[in-house]
Amino acid sequence: MQMVAISQTALTTIAGEPAVPLAAMPKSWQRIAAGSWMSEPRVYTAMAQVFLAKNQQGSILFTERSDSQHLKNAYCEGNGRLAWEAVTHFGEAFLPENYPDIEQIRAAVYTRDTQQKECTALVEIVSALFDELGYDVPATFYWTFLHPLKRSNLFEVRSFRFSEQDLDVARKFDAILHGGYVSMLRRLIDSISSQHGYFFEHGCGCESHLAKLNTCDSPFHYTIPSEARRKTLRAFFWSVMEEYLLFELRSATRLVYADHLDL
Image 1 (cartoon, rainbow, N blue to C red):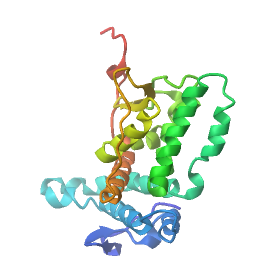
Image 2 (image 1 turned 90 degrees about the horizontal axis):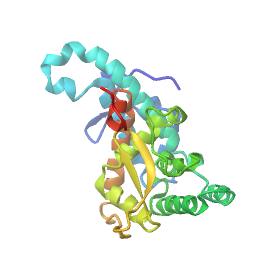
Image 3 (image 1 turned 45 degrees about the vertical axis):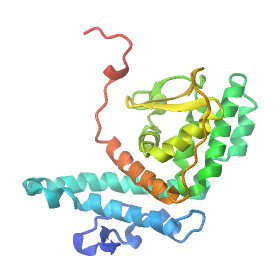
C-alpha cells in the first residue's frame, strides 16, 4: 500500500488527539483492529493512527515553535514518510504468521555442532518471553533476541550499523533494542534471561550480542505488576515506533567502538 498524504482536514480524532483514519492506514492495521490474538488490538491500532498523524502533521513542533514554520513542509514530508514506514513495518510485525516457530527453531538448534547448550538456552529464553508477553509485543521483539543464532559464534560482538551481514535487519532490530529503555519490560527481559545464566547487552554503537553473566551475578525474579502490564507494553510499542523512525535520522561512527585509533 502506497503512503497516503493526509491533509489536516482529513484527520479524525481519537481521545482528543489527531489520528489518521483507519481506512487510510496500511491494510495490516485494519486486520489487527478486527483481530483477537492481541490483548488490546484497538488500542494499538489507535496508537499507530495517532503516531502517523502527529508525524505527518508536525503537530507538536510547529504548534510550540513559531520560528520553525518555514521548515514545516519539508519536516512533514520527511517525517511523514519515515512514520509511514514505521507503522507499515509494525503492522506486519504484529500479524500472527510472522512470529517465530519456537519448536522449529528448537529442533534446528539440536542439529548444531557447536554451542548447542548455549543456543538452546537462548531459545528457551525467547520461549519464556513469548509465554509471558505473547502477541502483545511485535514479532521482531522475539526475532531480535533470536538473531545471535544466525552467527557462527553466539557471543560475537557485531555492529548492526556497520556489519554487512546485518544491514537488512539493522533498523528493525535496533528499534527493539533501543525501545528496551522502558524499565519494567527491561527488568522482565533480564529476569527471564538470568534464569538461564545470560543477559542481553546492547550498546549504542549500535552493537548487539548475547553475553554470559559474570560469576558474581545471580538469577533474579521479576514480573511486571498486573496493573502496569498494559501501559508498560503500550509505552514499549510507542517507543519502538519512534526508534524505527529515528534510525534513519541518527548518525553513527566507528570511533565509538574502535579498538585502536591512529589519529
